[in-house]
Image (tube, rainbow, N blue to C red; front, side, top):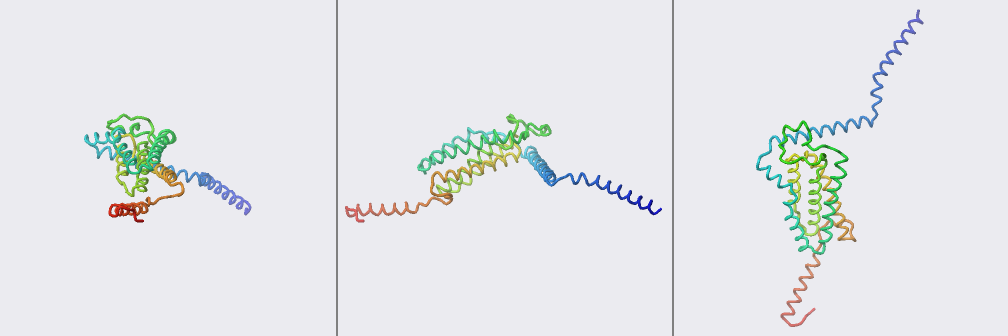
Length: 264
């Protein structure tokens, strides 16, 4: 009798153990890498949701016919040609010694940001532009054609933040001036891209980040080019010796005029 009870107890334990194993096996199958991947996907889904909500907010609350005209103009490359010409004239007149390096680094920065964002990153991420999303068609005003299917990251943002970051740091080095308006200029163009419906806010944010990294890299190349003996010449150019030399020359000229000879 006791042996039968003992066998029955063992059978119950085996049954309970099997049931627990059936419950725990799916949990055990979730390896740390799987859990981490699920967390990343949840975070990306959250970003996408916030991104779409920001886009909807802009297009439902902050639009007008006047802004339509302004934003369409801001995103056109032709309207900024006077700025590029002015920058070219300025660097040649003020810093002709460094003009070639400045111009080449500017062109390379633009070429890199434009090619990588359009030809590598957009096909890689394959995130559709908002104007291709069916659930957003009710708020799309279609003031501009949609263009290419993929929009992450924004090439406009990459290009202009690449220029802004390189110009800002190079001009600070050469001219000891902080042209903060360059960042505002790039940011306005980015907002125009969202306003016309070509990009989500995070598209332009990612483009701005990529452009800034590229611009900073080109700044280091520029520094190495114009100051080959210095690894990181991050301080402004020291013109103290030139200034002292100019004062000395003026004194010598004054002595020539007064005495008719040079007294060194």
